[in-house]
Every structure is written in structure tokens, then in C-alpha cells.
Length: 337
Image 1 (cartoon, rainbow, N blue to C red):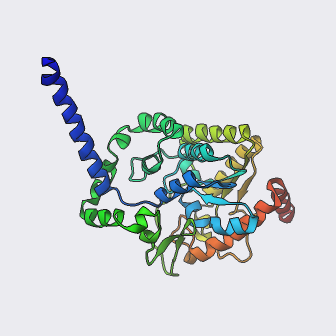
Image 2: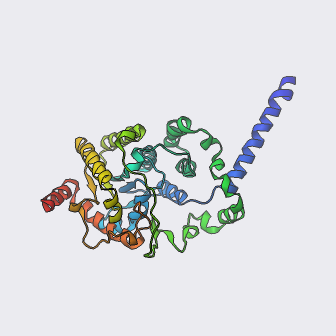
Image 3: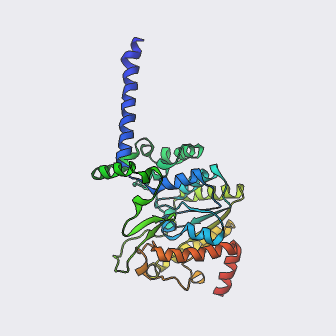
């Protein structure tokens, strides 16, 4: 009893204090994220089509339009900073509620040749994901391997948000937050609308920037490993899998022609070997007549679309999905020849 009072009790008090401080810091520093809305949708709704991928998919695919055109319920779970590892566990989380009929994976090749960085979005999916078997496995597969601090002290990645504490707390006390609303994300230049980020990009000169490009010599083996897991999971549960690459500006394609050709050759062969349809909308045979490929309608050289273009692309994607995976490839190959 004496040892308990002298050693164990103070230790328990210290742990309790740390938990309280950590909870307060998380609440005050971590801003409201639309990932929270996505997780709520996963927990409460069932979907026939699930979109996974990166910010290109988040900015370029309107699930509402695809849902309307295909007659299948859709959710867009594409996110900036979402590597194949993250996509796999997002799908696992979705399937705890129900198994979708189709998964569309948006492939941005830079996520297959760069390491998963320690950025603010590094643990965003994990932090917002409700506790479940999928989250526990996600913790072991990512947080323990890459940086366990992201799970123990999530606020650490948002320590630069001290100046916004007042706004963050006010947002989390709002009715919009409590009801998983999206009002907080409506900005003059963009908004989280109908399940995707809708950019309002005004035509203007955009500064040329360095962008990450495909480099086979720098392959991220984890990305390949977890994509293979995703493929196996889909096949085990009879889920149709389609892989796409969204359009980028013509100026970017012309400047980095070699890298984009190498990327297409590599992933076309990679998907073909695995029997997975791959639709690269940067190829001439996938060209859309009513789509403006010039830089002026993109937010940047990397290829984030504005809202109007995203809706045009979503209509085209819907038509291709309705046709069927292999029929689309036959049509485009025939048109190209």
C-alpha cells in the first residue's frame, strides 16, 4: 500500500494529466476537416461505388454527378496525402458497414515514387477514423511503422495553428460542426460541395512550379505492396476495380512529355498484367471534346481542375463506367486506330 501511494498513484495522476492536456490540445489545435464528414458518411451510409485516390480525385470527381448518371450510390474518399496504404484501410473501413460493388482508384504516380511525408495530412485519416478493427490494423501498419507520435499526439502536426485557436474552437462549438455540415469549408476560391472540392479558379497566369513526377528508380515499394493488398481484397469480395488517371494541363504534358509517357507505359503494363482496367485520360484516345485542357482552367500545373471542368470530367467518367470496364478500352483503342 505504501509503494502504491508513493510510486503508482503519482504515476497514474501524471498519465491522467497528460491525457487531459493532450485532449485539450487536440481540440484547440486540430481544425475541422471534411475527412470527419467522410468518416460520418462511411459509418452511417452504404455505397455502391467508392472513389479512392489523391487530391486530383478529390478536386476532379463529383460523386453526385456519377451517382445521378450511373444510378449507383457513390462516395469520394480521395484526399491529398492519401497513399495506397491509406486507400487500402479506407476501403477496409467502408467494408465494415457494407461491401461496395465497385472501387475506382485514382492513380497519381508521384505517390508511388515518393515517401509518405510527415505533413499535417500524414495522420488526418487515422485521427478522424472511428475506432474499429480496421483502425487498429491501420495503426499497426502505418503509425507504428512510420511515426507513432502521430497517433499519441495528433496536435503535434498542427502546432503552427496556435494563432487560429479561437477560430478552431468556435467552429467546433458551432451547430454546423455538430451536424457534420460543410459550411466551414466554403471559401471564395473553393468549397467542399456535393462530396468533392469544387475549385472556383479564375483564368489567370499561374506561377510555374516544381511538381513530383514518375521516377521508376525511386519506387515506393510500400505503395505497390498496399495496392496489391487492395487488389486482393477487391477480388476476394467480388468488387469491381477500375484505375484511372485524371487529366492534367496540356502545358504540363508538353513540358514533361518524357516522364508522362514513361508513367503511362509502366502503369499500363502493370495493370494489364493484373487484369485491371486502366483509363489514362491524358492519352489522345481518351480525349474529351468538350474539356478544356489548357492551364487556365486548372488551379495549377499539377492538374487540380476547377469545378466546371470537374463536372464535365465526371460526366465522361460516368459514361465510361456505364459502358463497362473492358468495353471502354476497346472503344478507345478502336478510335485511336
